Image 1 (tube, protein in one colour):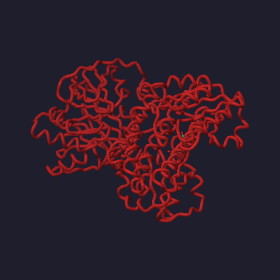
Image 2: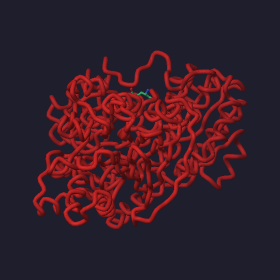
Image 3: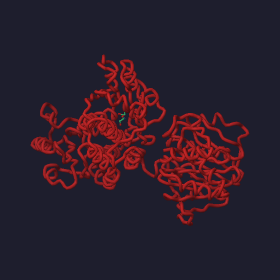
Image 4: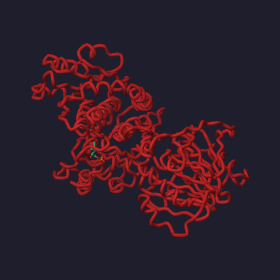
Length: 608
Ligand code: M6R
C-alpha cells in the first residue's frame, strides 16, 4: 500500500510544491521512502518520509507537472535506489506504482535479453522498461503504455510520465485504487482524494482495467482493449482526513474491512494449490536448513503473541514440529536451551518491538536460525533475522492490530504447509489447506457484510464492565485476542480463558452481570464447549456465542449468536477474529472512546 500523487497544470502553480504537499496527506499509506519526478526538473528520491525528501529538493527544482510517490516496500529494501519514481533505460519514461507485478521476474528476464539494464530490486522498474520497449514499435506514448499494461499480471495503481510529453500523465488501475481530480486548467491522479481536495472536489474513481490520460486541459478514460469508457464524476464532500480513511470514521474499521484484501495479498504468489505446496521466496535461502530443524520457538508480544499461539497448534498438528511460544519480554531473560536445529521465529507487525527484537537476538546468540513474520519491510526485525515471510498487509495505522493479526495467521498457515510438505504432510492435505485458504477472503467478506449485527450486540452490552472470553484449542488464543482488544480500546476488565479452565477458578466471577463471549465453531472440541456454556448458564451468566453457520444447538443455549461461515478447524481462528475485532471497535465507540487512539498505548513499542 503506497501513495501516488501526480499533477499537471497550466495555472502557473509550482508543481513541486503541489506534489510535496499532496504527499504529506498520503503519509498514512506508506512512509519508508519518497520520490518525485518532474520532466522539467529531474528526479529526487529519499529514504524516509516526506520531510526527508523535502530536504533534498534543490531550489531550482521547478516545473508544471510531475509524479510523486510514497513507498511501503514490498520488493526490495526501503533505500533511495528502490524508491519510486523508476525510469526506463533512457531516463525518459518514469513510473510510480502501488501494488505487486506478479510476473515481473519473467518480464525482467525477457527485457534483459533485449538489452535492458535494471537499477533497482523493485518489480515496478520493469513497467518503465516495458513501455520503452513498446515505444520502439508503437511510436505513441499512449499506445506503448497500453501494450505494456496488457503484458502485466498482478495488481497496480500507476502513474506514468514521458519527458517528451510533459503535460500528459497516464494512470491505470488494477486492484489498487486510483482517483482522478478534475480542476480548471489542472488535473490530478492520486491513490485517494485527500491530496486532491485542497484543489478541487470533482473526482473520478477509476475501476479495475481502466486506463486514463490526463493533461492540464482534460482527461479521457479507456479500457485495456483501447475501447473508450465513461466514468461518472463525483463531488466529494468529505474532509481530507475522512478521505484518508476512505470515508470511514476511523482507521481501525477501515483496516478491519480490508481483511479480505489482506488475505489475498498475503497469499499472492505463495500457493501452488494443485500440488498442495506453499512457495515462500523469503525462506528459499534457508530451505535446506529448515528440513533439519526439530524445534520452533515463537517469540512475540501482544496480539502477535496470540497469532503465535495459533501457529503452535497449526505447526504441531500439520508439520509435526514441537513448538513453544514465548512472550518476547520473558524469553529474553531466560537461559534458553537451543541448538542449531532450533528456529527462533519472531512475529511482529512493526518489526520494531523491542522485546521481540531482543528475544530474537538472544536466540541468535545461542546459535538458533532466526526467522521473522513481519509486516514492515526493512524494519529492524526484518533486517536482523536470517530469513522470513513478509505479511504484505499494508501499513496499519490504528493502534489496535487487526488486519495485521489476520495476515499473521495466514502467514503461519503458509509456513505450516511449507514445513509440513518438507516432512510428512501429504499432497492432498496440502491441497485441502490451500483450497480452504483461497476461500477465506469471500468468507470474511460475508462476515463483514453483517457487521451491523455485531454493532447492535456491542451497543446492547456497552454498559458492561467485565467480560469473559472462552475458547478451546485453535480458538483459545482467539479468546485471548478478543479480551485484549476489548480492554485496550474500552478500558474495562476483559479476560480470555481456556473454557476447560473455568472450573478451576474463573467461573467464580460469573453472575447475571458478567457476560461471556464463547467461541464455539463446529470443530473437534464443540461438544466440550457446549458443556462449558451450560455451566455458565447454570450460574445465570449471559452468553454471546460465535458459531458455525447452520448450527442450531448453540442458539438454544446462548442468549446471542453470531454465525461464521464454515471452514477447517485450523483456519477457523482467521474467521473468528474478525467479528471479535468488530465487536471491540463498536463497543469502544458505543462508550464514546476513539478506537484509533487508545489511552496509554503506542503503535510501535520500541522500549522495554
Ligand atoms: O508491532 P508488533 O506486532 O510487534 O506489536 C506487538 C504488540 O505491541 C501489539 O500487537 C499490541 O498488542 C496491539 N496494541 C494489540 O492490538
